[in-house]
Structure formats: structure tokens, C-alpha cells
Image (cartoon, rainbow, N blue to C red; front, top):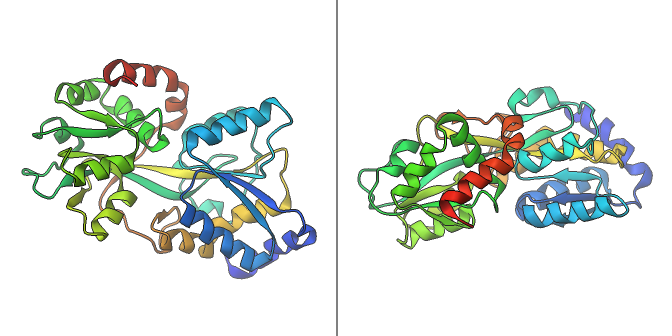
Length: 307
């Protein structure tokens, strides 16, 4: 988005600067902080942020909907799954932000827009030999493999959705039979592999890169046929639908907002604006199908791994 156009769009935010913009989010603190700081520098508009884990935030939103209605102006979530339901329930406003056409079609809808790309990859110990090169190799390596819980982490559900759509539950059955172990989060996968409790596991490239840069004895593997890529969506709550909320989203997908996301360690949704480059091919998920099958997918998974 051109700088002059962004300035013109943001000008509307100064008219009611006493009313803070309220954002509900599950996005990492550093990323939210740097983007909010940039928006505040551009507009001077106050922003209030409620940041909670996915499950807790969903519970908070459900409680508010049952009582006086959601008080947030913006939802900025980690993965498309929960946002898909809010969109289906007509909680979000449909509109077209300036610059939205720069976002790939897989990463936007009529009322949500990707802000960054998250990639699920393989992490393995530095002594693992042979190194797993593909997703299917995880059921063949010696030693336990760690899987994040898809009922706890939206990113882990992305793996469940992708493999169920491409491989069927035979993929998870093979992992289970080979001794795979469930942990709570992608971060715990990295910790467990670094400590030698697991040979390898599925995690986010963000977590693996951070651990490698801190000297952790692990390696990040970009598997074939590709890392499982999904977007972190943002949307305006329809009951609010203020000019300020719309301007914030346009800022997030502007060049400056995207560069700030890249500087915080994530792949921006718009290419060429910094941040880590993909380490290979990326594969995506049919989120509408995944959302419609969420309960049955989780039930089948629980039959194997419990929880």
C-alpha cells in the first residue's frame, strides 16, 4: 500500500482518539507490540490489547456473545480455524481493505485477511541419522516422535487437517504404532527434542529457528512435499466496524506493518517485505473442509492418542 494512501486512510482515526481500539488476539506478544506501536506512531490513537491462548480467548468471546456482546473491535488470531467459525456466524464485517489484493487467495476471505504465514516443519536432534527428509519419514525413524496436541494449539490442528486431507488417518496410525508421543504445544516439541527425550517432531519454523539461533542441539528440516503453511487472520468485528478498526487492518497489511511482522521473526503474508524466507515448498489446507470436520477429526485423533 503506498505511503500517501495509508496516511489518507489513517487520518480518519484521529477524529475519536479518546476511544481506544480494542484488539483480541492470540498472536505472539512481540509481534502485536511492534505492530501496535507502528499504528500508534502513525495515528496517535490509543489501543487496548487482550492477548490470551486460543482456547481461553475463544471461551472469553463465547461468554461475551452470550451476555452483552463482544467488546472487541478487532480479532487477530493465530490460525484460520476459530476465525472461520466467527465468519460463518456473521460476527465479522465484510469489506475490502486497500492492499488486500496483494494477499494470495488462499490466505484471505470476504471478511478476514492473512497477516503472516506460519509453517509447520520437522525438528530433529543434531545426531539423528538418517535425517528425515519427508513427512512420511517420521514413522520410520528410530526413537519417539513428538506431536503437538491439535485440541490445544490451532497450529497443531493444521497438521491434523492437512494429513487427514492428503494421507487419511493411516498417517497418524503409523505414527502411533511407531511410538509417537503427544505433548501440549509446538514449543514443547522443540524443548523435548533438544533435551533428547524425542528423536524428532512436528513444530513451527518460528520456534525451531529461535532455538537454533540460541544454540539448541536441534535441526530444522523443511520436509517434502512442503511445509504446512497457514495464515494468521485478522478481521473487524461487525458490531464495531469503525473507521479506526478498518484503518488498523490496512496498516497491518501495509508495507510498514508487514515489515514489522517480518522483523518480529515471522514470514509476512505479502512477499518481498523482509522476514524469514521459506526454506522450500509450501502446502496448504482446505480450511472450509477442515472446519466442518473439526469435531470428527479430533475424535478420531483422541481415539489414538487420548487426551
